[in-house]
Picture 1 (cartoon, rainbow, N blue to C red):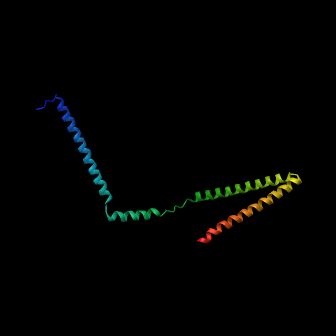
Picture 2 (picture 1 turned 60 degrees about the vertical axis):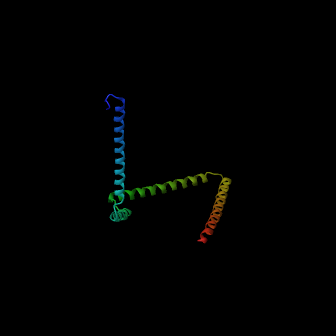
Picture 3 (picture 1 turned 120 degrees about the vertical axis):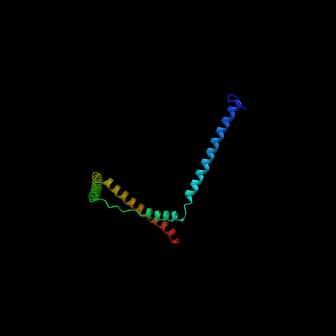
Length: 139
């Protein structure tokens, strides 16, 4: 018989507790995998339910905003448009002023540059549109 103070006794007790812990972990793993498989195989009714949920999820609910919010948004858009027009008018006025203060020779050169730029842009646009129509004809 083994005494409690013996070294072999301590090793056997530690081994038994380790084996118990290991068996407990294995049993828990087996049961958890069984539970997961059981949840995955719920049957036909769940697949029907899932498809109907998907159909419902696709539809977006239209929420109508309060009148005050719509009014505020409309007012803000109008204000933005007004600011944009004012800015464009300011820029145009600045360009006219910059042109007016130039000497006659510089004005002529500016006109020629503007004309040349328009011509080059027109050519570039024509070439680009010709290149994009060729592939379109394939299909």
